[in-house]
Every structure is written in structure tokens, then in C-alpha cells.
Image 1 (spheres, one colour):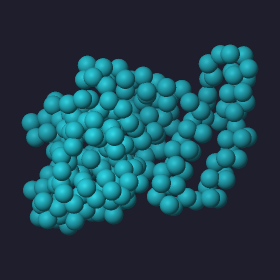
Image 2 (cartoon, one colour):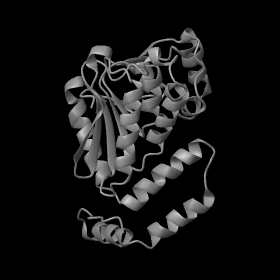
Image 3 (spheres, helix red, strand yellow):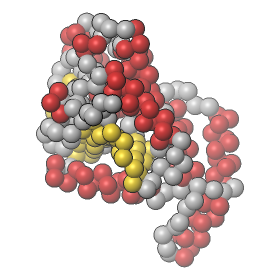
Image 4 (cartoon, rainbow, N blue to C red):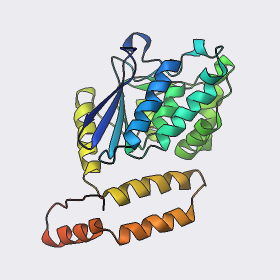
Length: 253
């Protein structure tokens, strides 16, 4: 067992995956991708978990995929990396990237696969694929375009420019910026806020908003989720709590 593989921890409705290779800027090895996929699969089966956070150890968030592995087995290349990033986007819980430092290469797509991205003033990013002769995979390019817009995607992919935290915020890569010492508290506060929402509506809208961004909305699935929400005990609880001026207690039913 790799003691430095990504680690999953649970705290009630909140799960956290921590990258643990600070000596290589949390670069992701093929084994790390397997661990990430296993953690995501496990969390998807935990009905109580409504929020999944990603963060890095040390100075950097993540420096992307281990480029030295690109010449290895066919199942250890960019396509497999992309499948894991797609799995992060499709994860059942709402996801938060706590961007504690620099984020580079494929790790930028890991962040874009998350629903929220909270960074610190010192973080920066760049996408060096073109400089390395590497063609990026479909899911990652789609996320760049749908989250950041075509012009920003072209600049980042085709020039390999490095941009700072303020530029990351301006183009929508970051949801917000907080001072480094406040990052954990802000992520905790957002996690608590999200975990307090009605699960049926929260998780359903997350899924359908992502589908809309990809131009792949399943109208029938949306209709079913709307009906489930409208007939749920949670909706009745939410209405009662609003009337009684109290905090609602949802159970996902």
C-alpha cells in the first residue's frame, strides 16, 4: 500500500480527498489515479455524503499527471487520466477544490471538474500540454470551454501562458479568493452551507446544470427529478421551516 496515495477522510456529510506528494508538488501517478477513482466510487455509494472536497499537501495544490508515465502502458495515459477527471465531474456529491497553491497541467482540469474552486492569492496556473506535444482529451477541453469560455480556453491551451490568482478569478477558474490562513475555514463554511441544503434538489440541480453546460441535458431525467422534489418530504419540511422561521432538517426523502 502506498502511504502517499490520495487519502479519503469522512466527517458526517462531508468527505475530503487530500493529495499527499508535496515533494513533487502533488503530481499524480497512475496509482494515484486508481486511488482517486476508488475513493470517488466509494463516496458515490455513501448516501449521507453531500460534499466532497479536494485539497493538496504542502505548497502546491497539484502539478498534474506524472508525464514520465505517458510512455507506459496504454491504460496509464492521458485518456485514463481524463476518465478519472470525468468521474470527478460526475461525482454524486457537490465538489469543492481547495486550491491551496499552484495548479498545473491536468490538475487544472481536476479543479474545473469541481463545482466550486476556492483559491489563495498566491496560487497560479498554466496548461503546458502544447509545449510538451501532448493533445488534451475531450472532457478536459469541454470543461475549459464551458467553464471559462472559448477565448480563455484557447489562450491557456494554445499559448501555455501562466496566469495568477486574480486572472484565474476574472476568467471564472476560481469561484473566490481568500487569504491562505482563512482557506480551511472558508471551505468548511461552504461545506456546511451545502450540506444543510435539501439533498434531492441539491444533487439533482448539480447534475443537470453540468449537463446543460455540456449541451447534454436529459430532459426526461430532469422531469423525473423535478417531480421527485415536488413530492418529497424535504419540500414540505422546507416550506414549514420557512413559515416557522427555523432551520430546516432535511433527510433526502
